[in-house]
Amino acid sequence: MKKIVIASATVVGKSQPLSADDLARACGAEVEWVARLVEVGIVTASGGGPSEWRFYSVDLQRALHARRLERDFGAGLDAVALILDLSQEVRRLRAQLRALGGLP
Image 1 (cartoon, rainbow, N blue to C red):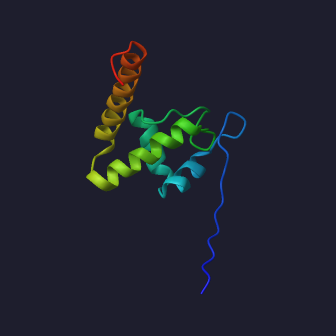
Image 2 (image 1 turned 30 degrees about the vertical axis):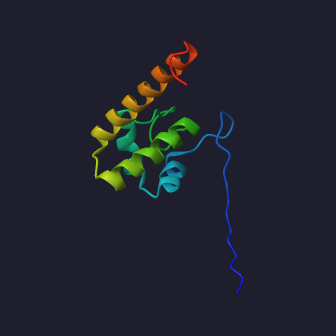
Image 3 (image 1 turned 180 degrees about the vertical axis):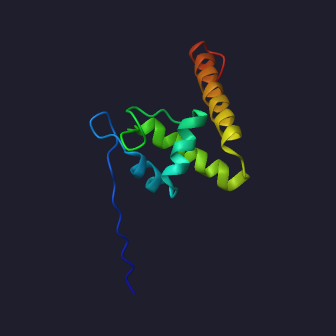
């Protein structure tokens, strides 16, 4: 028996940002969850209110990571925001060390 898999993709970029609905759908969540992400600083919304918000690839990446942290570890969004910020800082510091020859 043949199995058919249908996939679709959306390009996210400066010319094609995501709406709050799009971001929520991509994360399997509700728009209220996206509003909470904005509130705690996990993602940055450009535009006026939620119906006008626009999100970019970095926001999608952070939102998906936030969703996994919530699901896998039961972390609240305040803790998720801290985890994501600290992870980003660790990556930045490792890149600096690599540039200075301190890490392989």
